[in-house]
Image (cartoon, rainbow, N blue to C red; front, side, top):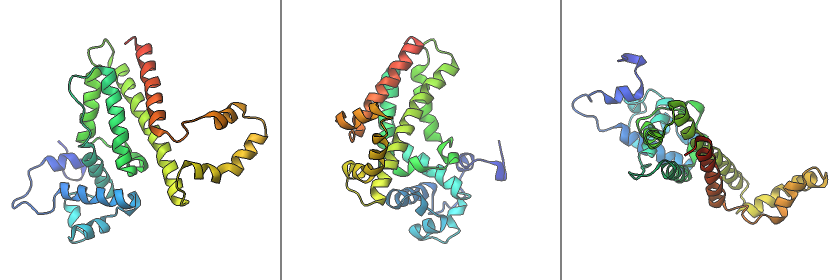
Length: 238
């Protein structure tokens, strides 16, 4: 077991708390930090702002987290606590439900799509629990460990790719004080029209003139997800 500065956040939190227990806890810290990020974005979350929200001394949160990296891990674990899956689902329903609920989670916490790489890949207990349940649903199907993990990560990558795009569109609409996708397309129209006049993109032009679900993010997500799951089923013979 690691000691001192080499111990991870989660190992440190597993250790018995000093007595008497301090009023400030990792749960309170995570709840306050998530509230700030939900309301004002990830950039608003600083250790000083957090201390002010908690009405504690500026250095008080450092008793539980060593800095911003630890804080982001704590926040991720906190929101993933709400991501649960029903028992008894087959592999496809399990991965589909996981994808849908991850999307809902990221819609409720837009900052999840803006995490730096270290936090995005953080190995928190709740994220590990989600991965364990997904892998368990794939276990026993005759797949080796590499295939199981690849299938799980393919679905996870699809979800995060979609949500990164949705987040970018939402951010652009907000930053430019637009009301919806139609106004965004009006803003982008001059550049798009130039591209179309070149005649190089006839299939894209057909999409622009005939597509009826340009702003139906839920339908786009569902359709793409089923394509991914169909592909996994075919490739792995499931």
